[in-house]
Length: 429
Ligand SMILES: [Zn+2]
Image (cartoon, rainbow, N blue to C red; front, side, top):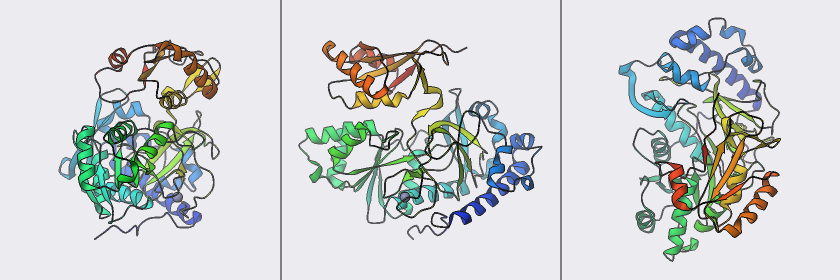
């Protein structure tokens, strides 16, 4: 039977969502104190009865990424016989963390993604192609597959194929939905164009972009996202999640920010002191996912910077919306007296077709007042001043541009097929 969002809190009055969230939070604290070795120790001084309103959450300590990595075994709750799937995520130390999922966790994952796609108008009438890895212990492809099929959409697990093979399947299957990584989608769209196909020849209506933001701080589409829309003649939708947070933020049909699912997670956006920031102000995303059995977390600091979209969404949902992930907190740069998001630079370079390839390199010492940033760009030397002035206009600061070539940039990127745009060679104290 197709998915019906009967458990969704999206359209409840704000006060009702808040009251239910408070109950869920208190239940979550009780669950962790009873079942989690890590939280039993760290919540010893806190009782759920101490939490009388959502603002009281400040009494609860955060869960830091590095602590999750170093004390990983203590966070696991599910017993071996209850775990039915294991997925991997890279911890802050670079050591892969194996996340256990129970049957309930998988059902929860399905509900989470179904609700996201449902909000974006996906239905049983759609044909979807998933163009991200479906194996190698990654959760994302499986999550999309489960969400789309639960809605009744005819879903094909293509994975990451060559653009030629992808074109073949697009022409044969006529999908209405694509799910993929923006930089790959550009490559695919350009291939389709070179093959003589025009957007009007394609059936694609919606493209769900993962892994990279498709909007700027001003909520305008990035140049990459604009290119995707032009190449496919379709709308792009943002979707963001991670293994740890076990909840998705996805654009609804209004495409004005990623809706949270309040029944699945409590969302905070906090400043560097750990205090809430006003709506529209950038801060760190901190998530408390509810109802996770395998490896539940409390006030997990994602290290991702974003902001809450003020006001109510035109779709009528009362769930919180967030803007794009503007940067990892660790990649927020202090440069010549200003704060700089790497995305400000990548957006400029992505909009210049003359730039064959590029990589931004961070040098110097991490956290030093004036960090060293270089743009290595595969371009003709004549274009350097043009790039510098465009970056200057966007970032209000001069960033040095070094002429490079695709082979050197490929070597700098290392052994990866991902289009890494930034490498961090800063010294750490
Ligand atoms: Zn909405």
